[in-house]
Length: 136
Image 1: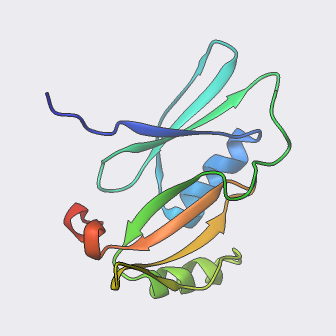
Image 2: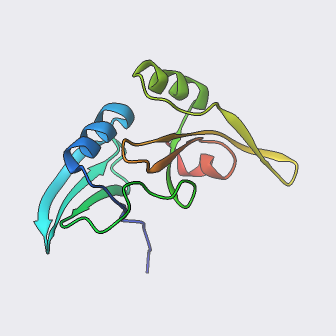
């Protein structure tokens, strides 16, 4: 058996706004959308065609207005975290500074965080260390 991640799902209240954000800021493309059992779904994917991001909008909305900061996040790899940070800032999107993640005395990656319009945390990782083998 070969196991491969198909998608990661996050809940959003404004589906159209979330689709627009992930397309504009991260360059994801809309792969499919449909309604299912009281919810609207949209699947977005990166150019590499790997795992997808599922945006799910339930009606009625049963969650808090904003997710609890730091409880969870989604992460994407890039070849140059500093360049990606500058590109995203040039779009007028606020994001954190690029930092180093060091574990066991070895720099594992460079990273920064940003948030989608609903407060979902996004981590951008430089493809190095254990992330290099996965590519970008």
